[in-house]
Length: 147
Image (cartoon, rainbow, N blue to C red):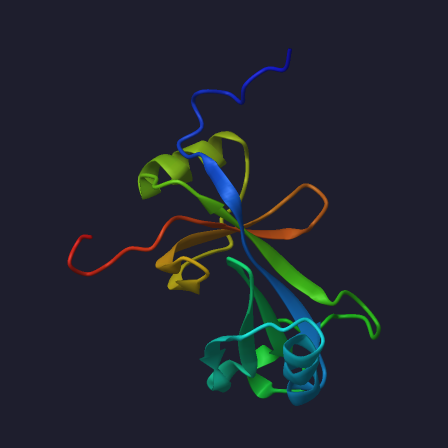
Protein backbone atom coordinates (compact mmCIF):
# COMPACT_ATOMS: atom_id res chain seq x y z
CA UNK A 1 0.00 0.00 0.00
CA UNK A 2 1.28 3.48 -0.75
CA UNK A 3 0.92 6.56 1.39
CA UNK A 4 -1.20 9.47 0.26
CA UNK A 5 0.54 12.84 -0.04
CA UNK A 6 0.57 15.00 3.05
CA UNK A 7 -2.89 16.40 3.76
CA UNK A 8 -1.58 19.89 4.64
CA UNK A 9 -0.68 20.70 1.02
CA UNK A 10 -3.12 23.46 -0.05
CA UNK A 11 -3.80 22.07 -3.55
CA UNK A 12 -4.27 18.85 -5.53
CA UNK A 13 -2.26 18.07 -8.65
CA UNK A 14 -4.29 17.98 -11.85
CA UNK A 15 -1.59 17.34 -14.46
CA UNK A 16 0.86 19.05 -16.79
CA UNK A 17 -0.56 22.32 -18.14
CA UNK A 18 2.24 23.14 -20.57
CA UNK A 19 5.91 22.70 -21.35
CA UNK A 20 8.11 25.45 -22.82
CA UNK A 21 10.69 24.57 -25.48
CA UNK A 22 13.35 27.06 -26.51
CA UNK A 23 13.83 27.22 -30.29
CA UNK A 24 15.85 29.42 -32.64
CA UNK A 25 13.48 29.36 -35.63
CA UNK A 26 9.88 29.94 -34.56
CA UNK A 27 8.28 29.50 -37.99
CA UNK A 28 10.09 26.20 -38.52
CA UNK A 29 9.15 24.99 -35.03
CA UNK A 30 5.46 25.87 -35.44
CA UNK A 31 5.40 24.18 -38.87
CA UNK A 32 7.05 21.03 -37.47
CA UNK A 33 4.62 20.66 -34.56
CA UNK A 34 1.69 21.38 -36.91
CA UNK A 35 2.79 19.18 -39.80
CA UNK A 36 4.52 16.31 -37.98
CA UNK A 37 2.46 16.03 -34.79
CA UNK A 38 -0.78 17.67 -35.94
CA UNK A 39 -0.74 20.28 -33.16
CA UNK A 40 -3.35 23.00 -33.76
CA UNK A 41 -2.42 26.62 -32.93
CA UNK A 42 -2.85 27.83 -29.36
CA UNK A 43 -2.19 31.26 -27.85
CA UNK A 44 0.15 33.69 -29.57
CA UNK A 45 2.46 36.15 -27.81
CA UNK A 46 4.26 37.98 -30.66
CA UNK A 47 5.81 40.58 -28.31
CA UNK A 48 7.65 37.73 -26.58
CA UNK A 49 8.50 35.75 -29.72
CA UNK A 50 6.29 32.95 -28.44
CA UNK A 51 3.70 30.68 -30.05
CA UNK A 52 1.74 27.92 -28.36
CA UNK A 53 0.36 24.76 -29.97
CA UNK A 54 -2.08 22.27 -28.50
CA UNK A 55 -0.97 18.75 -27.62
CA UNK A 56 -4.23 17.15 -26.54
CA UNK A 57 -5.43 19.01 -23.44
CA UNK A 58 -2.01 20.55 -22.78
CA UNK A 59 0.07 23.17 -24.55
CA UNK A 60 3.55 23.10 -26.03
CA UNK A 61 5.03 26.59 -25.90
CA UNK A 62 7.65 27.43 -28.54
CA UNK A 63 9.83 30.37 -27.48
CA UNK A 64 12.18 31.87 -30.05
CA UNK A 65 15.51 32.63 -28.37
CA UNK A 66 16.47 34.94 -31.28
CA UNK A 67 13.59 37.28 -30.39
CA UNK A 68 14.29 40.20 -27.98
CA UNK A 69 11.29 39.14 -25.88
CA UNK A 70 13.07 35.90 -24.97
CA UNK A 71 16.17 37.52 -23.46
CA UNK A 72 15.47 36.05 -20.00
CA UNK A 73 15.07 32.55 -21.44
CA UNK A 74 18.29 32.38 -23.45
CA UNK A 75 20.67 29.80 -21.94
CA UNK A 76 23.73 31.31 -20.28
CA UNK A 77 25.90 28.70 -22.03
CA UNK A 78 25.84 28.13 -25.79
CA UNK A 79 24.20 24.78 -26.41
CA UNK A 80 22.65 24.90 -22.93
CA UNK A 81 19.15 23.94 -21.93
CA UNK A 82 16.25 24.08 -24.34
CA UNK A 83 13.42 23.65 -21.84
CA UNK A 84 12.53 26.75 -19.88
CA UNK A 85 9.99 25.27 -17.45
CA UNK A 86 7.13 22.86 -16.99
CA UNK A 87 3.75 23.92 -15.70
CA UNK A 88 1.92 21.72 -13.21
CA UNK A 89 -1.84 22.22 -13.14
CA UNK A 90 -3.50 22.19 -9.71
CA UNK A 91 -6.88 22.38 -8.09
CA UNK A 92 -8.09 25.78 -6.89
CA UNK A 93 -5.98 27.08 -4.02
CA UNK A 94 -5.72 30.02 -1.68
CA UNK A 95 -2.84 32.17 -2.91
CA UNK A 96 -1.71 33.10 0.59
CA UNK A 97 -1.86 29.45 1.74
CA UNK A 98 0.39 28.59 -1.21
CA UNK A 99 2.87 31.31 -0.21
CA UNK A 100 2.92 30.04 3.37
CA UNK A 101 3.29 26.41 2.24
CA UNK A 102 6.22 27.20 -0.07
CA UNK A 103 7.94 29.36 2.56
CA UNK A 104 7.61 26.53 5.09
CA UNK A 105 9.63 24.38 2.70
CA UNK A 106 12.21 27.12 2.04
CA UNK A 107 11.05 27.44 -1.56
CA UNK A 108 11.52 30.89 -3.06
CA UNK A 109 8.78 32.24 -5.28
CA UNK A 110 10.61 33.74 -8.25
CA UNK A 111 7.52 35.27 -9.79
CA UNK A 112 3.74 35.31 -9.61
CA UNK A 113 1.75 35.91 -12.76
CA UNK A 114 -1.73 35.78 -14.26
CA UNK A 115 -1.72 34.50 -17.82
CA UNK A 116 -3.03 31.88 -20.24
CA UNK A 117 -2.43 28.18 -20.16
CA UNK A 118 -4.22 25.05 -21.35
CA UNK A 119 -7.12 25.69 -18.96
CA UNK A 120 -7.40 29.46 -19.51
CA UNK A 121 -6.15 32.51 -17.61
CA UNK A 122 -5.02 31.61 -14.12
CA UNK A 123 -2.66 32.54 -11.28
CA UNK A 124 0.81 30.99 -11.36
CA UNK A 125 3.72 30.67 -8.96
CA UNK A 126 7.17 30.15 -10.48
CA UNK A 127 9.57 28.18 -8.29
CA UNK A 128 12.64 25.95 -8.72
CA UNK A 129 13.22 22.42 -7.55
CA UNK A 130 16.43 21.62 -5.62
CA UNK A 131 18.17 20.87 -8.94
CA UNK A 132 17.43 24.25 -10.53
CA UNK A 133 14.52 23.14 -12.74
CA UNK A 134 11.89 25.86 -13.08
CA UNK A 135 8.33 24.84 -12.26
CA UNK A 136 5.17 26.84 -12.73
CA UNK A 137 2.44 25.86 -10.28
CA UNK A 138 -0.79 26.99 -11.96
CA UNK A 139 -4.28 27.06 -10.58
CA UNK A 140 -7.38 26.70 -12.71
CA UNK A 141 -8.78 29.46 -14.89
CA UNK A 142 -10.08 32.50 -13.05
CA UNK A 143 -12.73 34.66 -14.63
CA UNK A 144 -13.53 38.31 -13.88
CA UNK A 145 -17.19 37.42 -13.28
CA UNK A 146 -16.21 34.82 -10.64
CA UNK A 147 -17.21 31.73 -12.66
